[in-house]
Length: 234
Image (cartoon, rainbow, N blue to C red; front, top):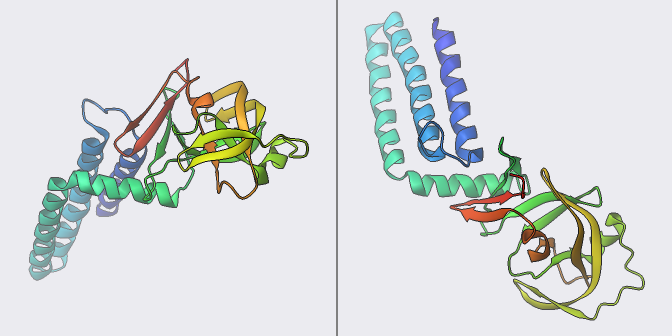
C-alpha cells in the first residue's frame, strides 16, 4: 500500500472511531462502544504516524527523527486520553448533543438513541400528525405536552380548548387543555391516539415527551449520556 493509501486508511479508521463513539449504543465484538472507538482511533493514528515516519526518513534522516519525536508525543497524549476516557466520552456526548441538537439515531435493532446535551436534557426529534416536532424527554410530565404556539401546525386548533387541567412538568404544574394526538412518531416508533395536553401560550419553550407516550414503549433507559427508546417490537 502506498503512503497516501495508508493515510487514507488511517483517516477512515478515525472517522469510524468518531461514528462509533457518538452513535453506537451496544457492544461491538465484545468491546464497549467507547473501547471500540478508542481502538479504531488508535489504529487510525498509528497508520498516519507510520506513514509520516517513513516519509520523513525518505526525505532525510533528520526528518525521520523529528517524525519519531512527534509520534512519541502523540502516543503519550493518547495514553493520557485513554486513562481519562470516561471524562472525554462525557464531553464528546455533550458536544454531539449540542451540535446535533434534536438529532436521533436509529440502530439496526430499531432503538432510537439521542445524546445528552450540556444542560443535562435530551432533545428528541419526532412527528406529530406527520408534522416535524421536537421534544424534551421528560419523565416528570404525566402526558405529552405541546406548546400552544406549535399546536396549529400539528392540526390542533387552540380556539375552544379548555385550559383548565393541571399538568405536571419538570418545572412544576401548569394549566393545559386535554387533547388526543392521532399519530405521534419518534424514529420507527409510532403510537396512535396518544393522550396529550396543549399548554397555554408562553408556558413552554419546547414540547414535552411525557409519560403518556413513554409508558407505551417496550422500554426506555438513560445509559450514561445516551437516551435509548425501544418500541414494543424492538
